[in-house]
Amino acid sequence: MDRQTIMLGIAGDSAAGKTTLSKGIADALGEDQVTVICCDHYHRYDRQRRNELGVSAIAPEGNYIDIMEQHFRLLREGKPILMPVYNHSTGKFDPPRYVQPTKYVIIEGLLPFHTRIMRLCFDVKVYLNPPEDLRYKWKIKRDTAKRGYSTEQVQASLEKRKDLSPKYIHPQRKKADLIVRFYPPDEDTAETGGHLNACLVLLPTLPHPDLTDLLAHSGNGRRPAMQLELGRYESKPADFLQIDGSVSANKAAELERIIAHNLPPGDYLDFTKLGKFQSGLEEQQSYPLALTQLLIAYHMITAEEAVIA
Image 1 (cartoon, rainbow, N blue to C red):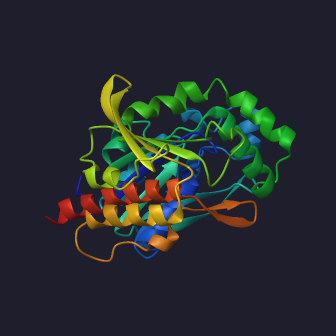
Image 2: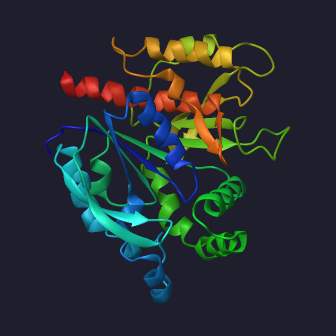
């Protein structure tokens, strides 16, 4: 296909943090530079019809996979699409929206890596893999606050989907270039926000940045800001980058400057936009999230440079 845009795919189960991750990257790169699309818009049925048919939004048959393939390819070629619009508040479809892709395109959702054609459209593929108990807490909090569900309704939905996620969502991990896992520290297992640790599995399918300088400035105490270990993931060799949830603002800013130094010359990013997330009505800050978003943005920017070259 004619490669005209840089595309990032973010896959993961419901309430795994896809929108939070993508929003920070898009805000940092600039809203005029980034087009963000959620795969939820490609549901085949509205909420009432799904309930009548007993079809889950997680299952491929509950989505227009063929139209996603077509639209991903068009976006990759820099061509506009007429995107369907699913309204989570009403459970119905709103009028479609005309979308002209910008330089960067971020597609996040349940099934963005489901077929080979879809996967071939992406420069960078990220899978979000939080512990299930943490994801459940996030989903209950989000769906009751923003989507009008009761706690009992969310719990029933989670129970109904528990056998479908391993079948359809989880296999996409094997197709990703990075697997991101936010998780609570051992000393505070109830943590769900700004002080979560992060583990990034860096697969050799992408040319990841040299992290030598980053690790050298991470500190040598009992809890360095970052640690790197070589291991295997899904039978593939991989680097495991651990980011401590207690990293300070000053240390995070220092590490961000080191990563930015590895980027091509130019003002690519607004660093003040990284690491923001909503907790209810309050905006909070996570430095592990900021560093994760920056490392993913690094791959988008370097992919752009490769296209220009």
